[in-house]
Length: 485
Ligand code: FAD
Ligand code: SF4
Image: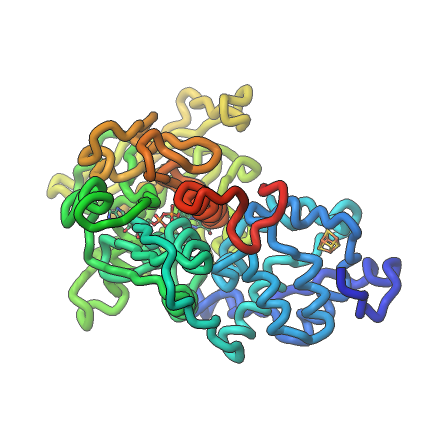
C-alpha cells in the first residue's frame, strides 16, 4: 500500500458530499446524440478521491468482477499521478474508459464500498472514467509487443469478452487474431450502446490500444461461414480458440401483430442507428421510419437505449412499457433517471397483449393490461399478474421489443460435438473451458445476456486458462489477483 497523501483525517473525509458529474441539459440533449454525462473535471475528481478512507481491506475491490485495485488507483489520483492511476487500473481492466461509463457500479464496487454503509459511496466509476479519459488525452501508448511469440490463439468476436482475452494473451506473448463478423470491432459497445452513452471515438481509442499490443483484428470474417472453428484449429494453425460471439439474436413476446410494419426489435433499431448511421439518413443510406408515438417494451438497458434513441430520432411521445415496478427494473438507475428527465413516459406494471393494425398493414396501437405483483419467481423478483378488466389501448405507430437476446446459433451448428445448453448458450466450466479440447468460451455466448464487466471477467479467465493449457503454467494472467473473483 502506498503512503497516504490524503490531506484530511477520515472523520473529515466522510463529511464531504459525493460529487456529481457535469451533465448536458435534459431538454437540449433529448434531440442530439451528444454524450449526456460529461464526467468529473480534475477539481471534482480530486475532491471525490479525498472521500476515500483508504481501507486496509478494500471492500470495493471485492465488488469489482475483474478485481481492479481501486484503493491503489485512487491514491495515485490523489497524488496527481494520473498516469500511474491509469496504469494501476489497466493491470486488471483493458477497457477502463468504457467501464467508467457503462458498468453498473451501484451494484458492484460502489455497493461494497465501506463509506456506503453510512454515507453515499465513493463514485468509483466516475473516478475510473476521469483517469481513463485523462490517459486517452495525455497518456503514452502501451509498450510494443515482444517480437518472439509463444503460440497462436484465435478469438472469435470483438466484444468486451474477446477484446479482454486478446489483450491478456498478447501481454503473455501470444500471437492473437480476433475474427469479427461485422465491419468494425467492439460488439455491443459498437452497435448496441448508443453514442449518447458511449461515444464511438472512445471505443475506437480503446480498440486501437489493444491493437497496439500486437493483436490483429480481422473484420468481415464470419466464423462458421468464412471458416469453421475446426478449420481455425486445423489448416489455419491456431493452437486454441476463445469463442466470444455474444447473444445478438433478439427474442420476441409472441403476441399477435408482431408481423406488422412498424414493429422492430431493439437490436435492429440500435444497429441501424449506431452501426449504420441511420440518424443521418439520407446522407447515410439506412433509414429508420418511426411514428410520432413510439412504445418500447422491456425494462433493461437495451429497452432504455432504444426508447431514448427513438426520442432523439423525433418521437413526440416515447413510452417504456414494463410489466413490473420501478424496484424490479434491471436497467441502471442513472439511465432511468436520464430517460425520465428527457421526457420518456414509463408505464410500470403494464403488459402488452397485442399490436393492432390500421388495415393497411401498419401499427396503430398497442393493447396493454395492468398488472399487480405477486410472490417472487425463480429470478427473485415479484411475479406480475394481470389485473382483470384493466385492458387499455396505447395509441402508437411504432412498437420496439427489447425483452431479451440469445446467442446466434451459427458456430454451435457448424461445430460438431460442442456442448450447448438452454437457448443455445455454450456450456463452460469455471475456467471457461468447453467440452472440446483447446476451445474456450465466455461472455454473453456462455451466459445468455449479462454485462460488459462479466464478459470481461470471462475473457480474463479464459486467457489464464488458455495460457495454462498451452504453456502448462499454472496461474493467472498478468494483473489478475489472487483469489480471482
Ligand atoms: P458482444 O458484445 O455481443 O460481442 C460479440 C461479437 O461477436 C460481436 O461483435 C459480433 O458481431 C461477433 N460475432 C458474432 N458471431 C460471430 C461469428 N460467427 N464470427 C465472428 N464474429 C461473430 N452491459 C453493461 O454492463 N452496461 C450497460 O450499460 C449495457 N448496456 C447495454 C445496452 C444494449 C443495447 C445491449 C444490447 C447490451 C447492453 N449491455 C450492457 C450488455 C453488454 O453489452 C453485453 O453483456 C456485452 O457486450 C457482452 O459482451 P460479449 O463480448 O460477450 O459479446
Ligand atoms: Fe475507498 Fe470505499 Fe474502497 Fe474503502 S471501500 S478503499 S472507502 S473506495
